[in-house]
Amino acid sequence: MSGAIEMTSSEVTISSTIPTTNASESSANHTSNNLRQQDAFERYIWIYTLPAIFIIGVVGNVFTILVMRRRRMSGTATSVYLTLLAIADTSVLVTGLIPEWLIQTDIKDISEVDPWVCKFERFFFYTTGDVAVWILVAFTCDRCIAVCFPLKKRHLCTATRAYLACLVIVLVAVAKNFHIFWTRGVVYDAAGRFIENCGKPEPYVYFEKKIRPWIVMVTVSLGPFLIILVCNVIIVKQLVWSGRMRTGTAAGSGSSQEKQQRAFTQTTAMCLSTSFAFLILITPSIVLLIGKPNWTSSDRPNIAYDIAKAVNNQLMFINHSINFFLYCLTGARFRAEFVSMFDRCPLGGSDGSSGETGSRTHYSGSALTTRSSPTSDIVAVVTRQNGASSKYSIHPNGDAKERERVAEHVIQETKDT
Image (cartoon, rainbow, N blue to C red; front, side, top):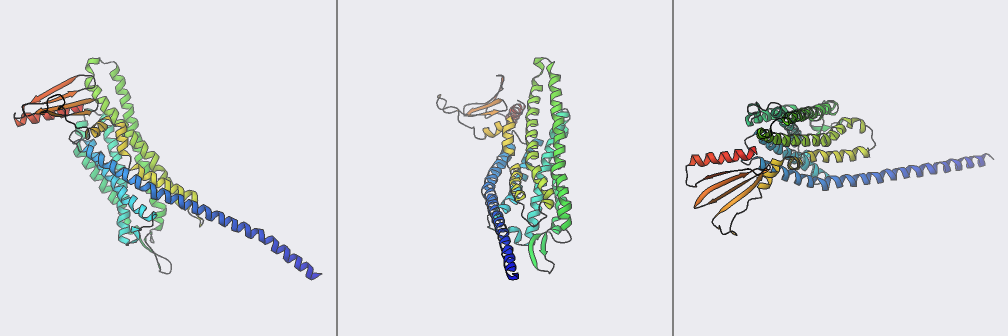
């Protein structure tokens, strides 16, 4: 009787453990499948989207540099800021995107080649990112001053001051990130065994995980965004007030004011587009950085966090790749100058004047047409959007100073229209 009871008890025990084992295996298989799907999705994001972002960003930034260095666009504070911003954005893509892509494609983790490679790679990536963000802040502040103090902008918003501001930004960014040469490096376990070349060694683990994320949040995301937002509100408010003031003026006296209005409106649109792109594309990645210690504290993988991290890193790189397209979309002068790079064509031949060559450039609602021939004057005609035009001519063999004076006058009038 006792043996029967024991047998029954054993059977019951065994049968009760079988479903538990099956449930555990099912849960493990489900988790394994999720991890494989997550890994495949992440690799797809990293491997296929990063090259596209890199190519689009580098090509767009190069076009920005070429446009801003052209004669009609250069020599201003805006050209300085946008040129250096394009250089900084390209540097971010090179120092951040390429190493990440090499890791995700299992080609090479260059940060693990040597501790000093790790330090320099992290240092340049963080520094160029900071420089790019704060050049955008400086550009927005420059435009705010130009709108609010139009009579002083020629003295305050100069190319020299722009270069000086960017130099200060670079020096401060270098000082901010110089700690990388101490807080990143070789990591060993408690037994003294090597773990990795590019880690967070003691006693800097607490700083890297708890303090530095807040520094990044304030200096790279929240602070710049608030400054840009305040400047844009001031710009828009000032433009609205100026528009109301011009409503009651005579139509014939508003020509120069209309030119200023067009320039300010374009600049405002460029500032608003870049600042809102910054807000949308950068802030999510900073939020993930702040929440990382809480969302990755357990030993179990956090699938949602890993996917969100992959997506948000792409958004961060996109922020450094789309400025050229924003400029073309919101800046008529920039767009027209870019088009003019490819809009040079001969004028003549079909009309019998085979000896005459020329070009026509559309620029901010105006058109600049130049014609020259060995036997006639060089003619430059500036045609405005309202149909009015100005004509300048000088003989090719005329006085050199006179030719230079006329050329500068034509270029300046083209800028003003």
